[in-house]
Image (cartoon, rainbow over all chains, first blue to last red):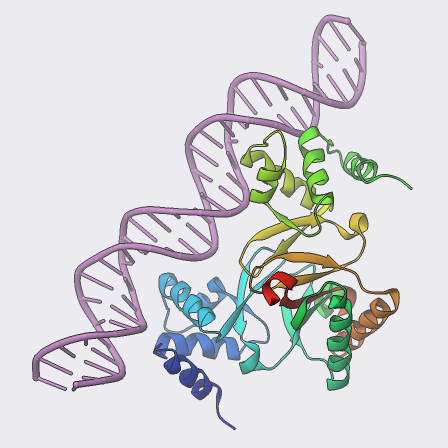
Length: 145
Length: 145
DNA sequence: GATTATATGATAATGATTATCAAATTGTTA
DNA sequence: TAACAATTTGATAATCATTATCATATAATC
């Protein structure tokens, strides 16, 4: 089982992009967090500090190279997370009051049912379905109590 | 069966907000479109022209009052649509190449299954689930051919 | 080691969104 | 209906997140 950084590096190199210290730190930070992060959060979390201009450039490079994917919160924030081929297929649990987002996985069985559901929903439209993503809204334990 | 504008007006008035010509035109535009619209699209579509400053202010007012909901496209655009209590519960079909977004409804049966799925996925997390939304990615008929 | 390519960080520029405010409109009250 | 109060409008300026620029630094290749 190959490690995360090795996978990322291989992918980047094949695209002529270097896996530098800054980029490694960003990937590290995202891998250590259960849910997507904003640029500002990445700025705060990384040590030593990476200037905003570099973070913005790097998350863009990493998104363009399919290492990260961009996510939008209901609070209008842009958040980045590891792409599915690195983190595994998952969905999101969004806490409406506090805007926290955390990852959630379905059981293989549920996942199959969801995929079928998506297929049949799209059938009438003539779309060729390539993926799906479920966002579950609610109140996190903190906000619910 | 009460009309759309009557519902919106009643809701706004109860919140001390007026349902003006501009706002009516924006709601009209969104009601006539199968999928969410950007501010720029709203600007182009409404006649006579509503200045950007007013559109921005109004979509914000209408979102704050739960008449509209905000949606984010993968192209980083902000899009607005009628809130579910006005347009009915639905999901989105996103064309990855061309970024078009269109509404899609599940059958009552599928919808029930999806709701159950969301419930069970969130069970372990301690979240109290209040809603869900499915995004189906794929290629629209145009892009697929 | 010389050369070439890519990345970095500081700063300026851009673009989308929000704030400001005087004038216009709408709603209310006498 | 006139006078008053509250809200909305449109023009403009200000803000904020993001992107572009560019000289320097770092890494890869020959």
